Image 1 (tube, rainbow, N blue to C red):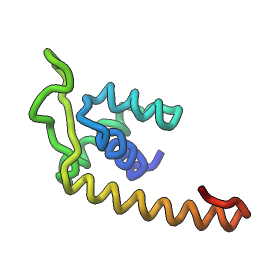
Image 2 (tube, one colour):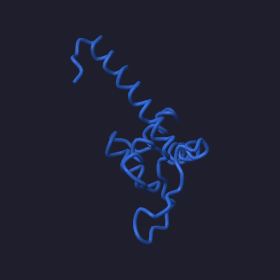
Image 3 (cartoon, rainbow, N blue to C red):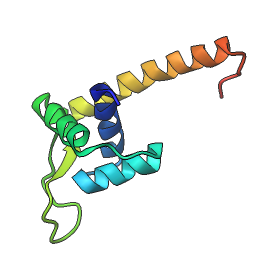
Length: 103
């Protein structure tokens, strides 16, 4: 999986609320049927945090949580919206080209 794909998956699941690494990967697996490898997941988290698209959550996702919980920033949410809208346009064009009427 490409690192940008991993980053988009992380942003997508964090758009639903703060999570720690294991919970992020579980949500990605529920969404795609595959987990990210540790290098892909933690590399994506590091790159996203460096770009200020995610940040540590103010409050743990669950009481007594020991893992580092991350949340999407407003900048991350804006980028995700833009990227998903572009992906939707490309997807619709590809489906039309295949003779499939996109929903």
